[in-house]
Image 1 (cartoon, each protein chain N blue to C red):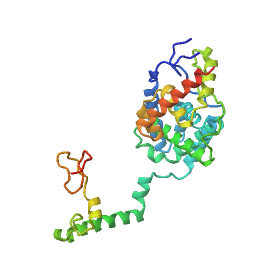
Image 2: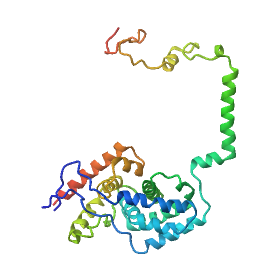
Image 3: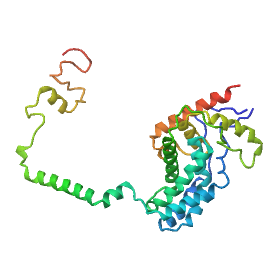
Image 4: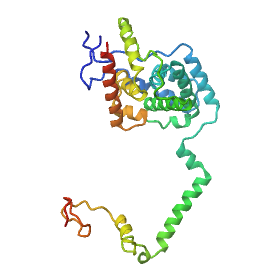
Length: 111
Length: 194
């Protein structure tokens, strides 16, 4: 019985004869085809995508400049239903300050 | 008979690893510049490894051959990208993996379909006496699920790290490690069967 680890020393299989020529033919065919740019280049070069993202940036900048700060909506005080307001608030992670309105403690018992 | 040593095995050193990764840089740069002759250099450096990965994923020599041709077509038709590729060998193996997955998806192959017993590994050139052992290992490898077979072979035949296997197969590092561990464990059970 050998003490060699499993698969130790084995080599990957050789490619079958003829595959080299077939692969090179496929590669040459690919060289003749127009190059296909990757997705980021396609987005960058597309006039429609350029128009869309530049319009979005301009709209955000415009809204940021024109809407006065006092008119912005505060999701926690905008008169939302209590359930929705609950969802909009961030979870509390400080164990020393359990929420008084949650109806339970972090240990699972009633307040 | 082969003895399995431990769950996490020492990965065999692959001394030519760095050299084949480096050897691809020049052909990649030439291909990016439109030099079709560089395809031959890519084949010489990587052809066998690409075929092996395609075979490990698809389980059939004829499918693996189709995958390799598709990889060379993609390599040439996406030559604009090549100049920006940081690790050519990982990129090439990832393209091979995805081409194999695409081929299997196109053909609607079900995972449960039994695979042929292809020569998934070969005896080392300096030790042809291990040919029977290699055939037996290949037979058992063919019974593993494709993702596990691919991960085990990449790790234990090619010597890639889990991180590299994750990059090649498009999964997180822990998933790659898990596939290796499960595949190796299953392979061990198969090899211990009488």
